[in-house]
Amino acid sequence: MSRPQLVLDIGGVLASNLSPLLWRLVAEEAVVSEKELYSAYKEQISERLWTGSISEEQFWIWVKSYTPHLPAERARSFIAQSLQPLPALAMLQEWSADADLHILSNHLPAWVEPVIKPYEKLLKSVTISSEAGFRKPHPDIFACVAPHLTSGGTVLFVDDQNKNLRQAALLGWRTLLADEEGLWISKVMDFLKKESNQE
Image (cartoon, rainbow, N blue to C red):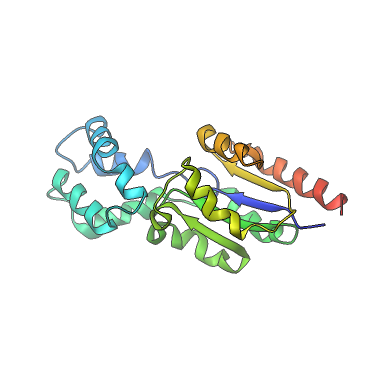
């Protein structure tokens, strides 16, 4: 029997989401309120950033237009402050013994590399939206993952956004919502145990 395929998001699953802390930190230095800043980000730049239409450097130029007195080095440090490891990250070693691990995330490689690099040897594939050119829940980013999945293995996709889970379910993947309390971790353990008993 093929090994189960565990597909994991990063933000809200393996590490904290950038929002709201990133925008709170930036807004403290900005000439507009946090609400105005985040609204402008969503309207002007979010889609293009996560799909690779603009570079990370262009993102920081955009931030600078709202924070003219914020030093670039300090601004970049906000990413590390906002993207902190969550308990599930420490489970990857254990999970890799029973499943093939894959990453599927709306992100920038440079931002998530410090989080996942220590575990890269455990990962069968890493799909990041800004490299793929599509962001979840677009079907095409899921199609980027499909060739890396072992045929016949049960796929479990963990994400903290229901809209992304709905798209995965259309592909026949099992899905699991990552709750803020981390209770989902025990459900992954149950899934792997059940799959192992079926071998």
